Image (cartoon, rainbow, N blue to C red):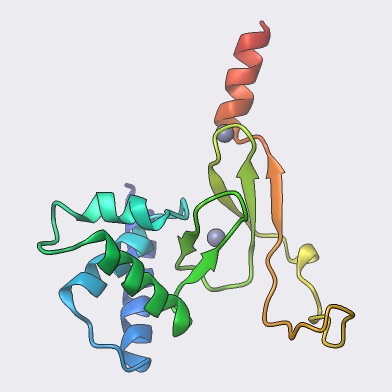
Length: 155
Ligand SMILES: [Zn+2]
Ligand SMILES: [Zn+2]
């Protein structure tokens, strides 16, 4: 990891820690470990991926605990949950408005920052009868690696 990235992720970690305290959550060893992991990764890991990364370092951590802690983070608004109907939920510690793009080939999820796609508001009175809390836009496409593999297979 280069030093810029390292600095960005440690700032993110401090912001998350502060957010945790501000929400009245005690910073347990396990919560800190998860926040640290989320601050470092920008690949929108699933709960299972986070568990796999942490299980050897964090004593007594179970898969259930990881799920429970993530749910708590989502509930207090520290982390957002990106859910797609076919896939496992992924978690994102970047709460600024942004969108996602999913690779149709390998399933990689990347951030897509383009404020042109931000809605000005939510559809308050809509025919579904739902109250609307939030939205997310997910684009599909091919990631750079899969584009490269596709080109190599053509030639
Ligand atoms: Zn791909
Ligand atoms: Zn994201």
